[in-house]
Amino acid sequence: MTDQNSSSVQKISELDEQARTELEAAAFRRLLKHLDDNKDVQNIDLMILADFCRNCLSKWLVTAGEERGITFDYEAAREHVYGMPYSEWKTHHQGKATPEQLAALDARQQAKKD
Image (cartoon, rainbow, N blue to C red; front, side):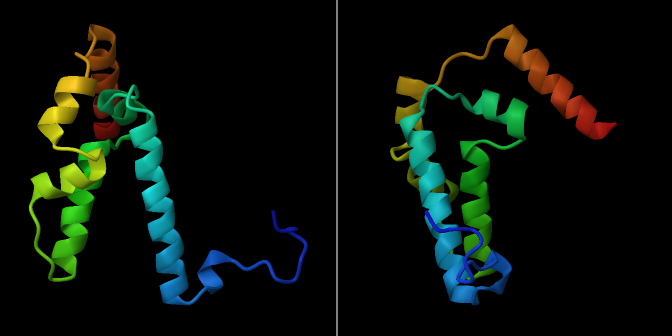
């Protein structure tokens, strides 16, 4: 670990665009691995706590591609994020949302509207 008082410590905002992009991409890949390693974390739990889920990441990938003139479909993006076809992931890893989870998600969405 680098000493934070060292003169070699940089702010991310001081990096050139390519270095920053590479770091952000590495962090994104680590997030995907973390989600893959924690399949028990349900999308609804992510939505309740952080207002995003694996499907949101997939949509953001599609949008980022479109912004750069790259077209791929949502299902391809989901397969990348989930590490397998979504239908397979859903069958093996997605539980049924509990009434408590649904109520918490509804409360979060209502709070955003207020």
